Image (cartoon, rainbow, N blue to C red; front, side, top):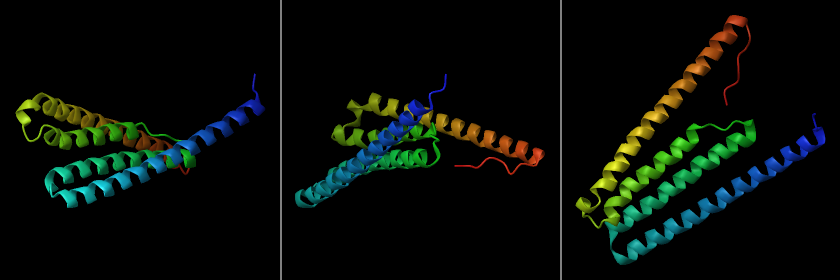
Length: 160
């Protein structure tokens, strides 16, 4: 039994929730930029440039994750489409950040963190393969849809 009033209410509520998520991501991004600037200033004051640079780089990776999520949220709010690959990108970025921070956290003694480092590399390779497979299958689906539309004489589906 369709309930147009209820569905309309739920659609508006969903739109408000996504607006809240987008604003929260924006605020988080601004806070990460602030933290990066504070860390960069502290590095210049302390003189521990290498360690400080790598920690600041970790903050930039967090900003990269937030940027990916903001882009996905904007795309969703415009088109209603949310791509699975965004989660894979976020996981990859997070693992790359970890790959950079493991040597910093182990104070240069990688032999104590070799398992952690190795597993992170394996996870990056597995996610990289997953990312490629998902993108490759989406591209093939898009090409098949376009071929099908051309054979019917339709203009074809719009790509987001």
